[in-house]
Length: 511
Image (tube, rainbow, N blue to C red; front, side, top):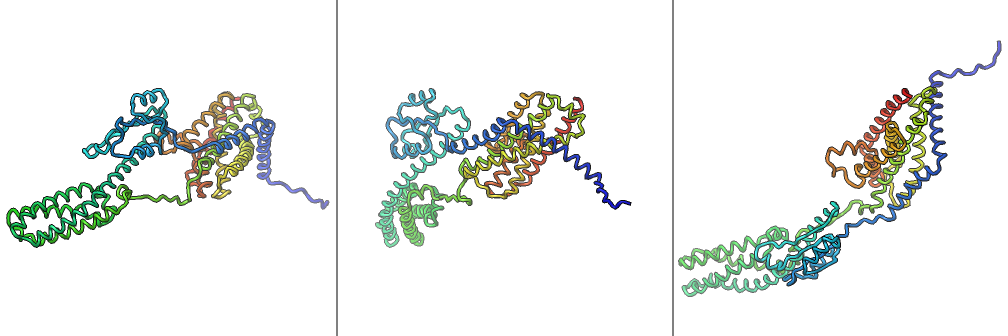
């Protein structure tokens, strides 16, 4: 009996897996070789997106719209306020091209497209305010861009606030001048109250009635110059109590006058002492009021803004993850959209149907081939982003996993387009439609919150919607994407693969 060693008998399951992998490898190599034999396609899909990214990064300048503005001022000028300060405030937000007193001239330039906005300033603003009505600044626009119109309305609101503060600063400064004069008169008034308290003779009482009327008038004038009570409250308890103290003093003075007329002033000796104390309080509060900067009287509440990250990213950095997601998706969809329709039209399905391969092996091979190619192209794009200063704050492993899932989901959409298309041109057209949908509904330029709920199913069916959100989280925030990002891409990839299997299987059976 021979002692020669018998060859090992391979397990049937391993044998089947080996054959399955060989068939997948065959389709994988087929797709890789087809792409390799098309250098122009490689250049257009890698160099093209790279140039787009570089052009975007080197030329994008974030700025507010330049609104060409004409200003119509009254012929008599802006009485009571500083014209140069008003023009400076308007010029902060608007591009002042014309200042005129001829409204017809400005409106003609607006109608001819030479101006985007005309502002009409009212005359005698301060006089109007003192008369009890609000003057109106008219804004006339010829904007056709809704975003530009929104900017104009926002900038007009900001301008009105600044002009109001400028007018209030002027008013507050004048009120402080008047208050300084009132302090002198209050000191004199305190002496007259002391005289009233100490001299209860008939002659002294009658002489005091005129003094009391003058004090009442003085309290009215002091209260009229004070800013709103909310402003006084924000400036501290001493100023917050000034208006109630004035009103109590005025009420007491009016009672004193009535008591003098009724010869019952002796009953108000304690109130007279209280009035003298109130005058001292008011005098001290007026000193604080006079020494308070006018800006604090106009804007008692300030602001302090802090970004916990230091500052927001430049626009090119913020948009780069979205550009990467868009280019990866569009490359994958374009390649996938042409993959099946081309072979179906060439009659390759008839060969595949009789070949010892399954549809799943064919599709997986195509997925692998395109995934490797798109992954290499993505590596070039990531290198370009690094040169632009785009950070990677998160995990490279998480980033790679998300990018791989984005490629697979995008290829699924591309293969689905290819399975549904009747020609190459139709497949390309559908791929372009998917690109347009991605630009408008993925949250790239317009936040998803801006859309009605009816548009959200469309937005969430786009791979880029989830890829954009996830890449921004990883690269710019250093955070892992939330579960909805992974689930969304996984659902798109799985559902598109199953639909391609069903549709393509039916097409192969009919071939």
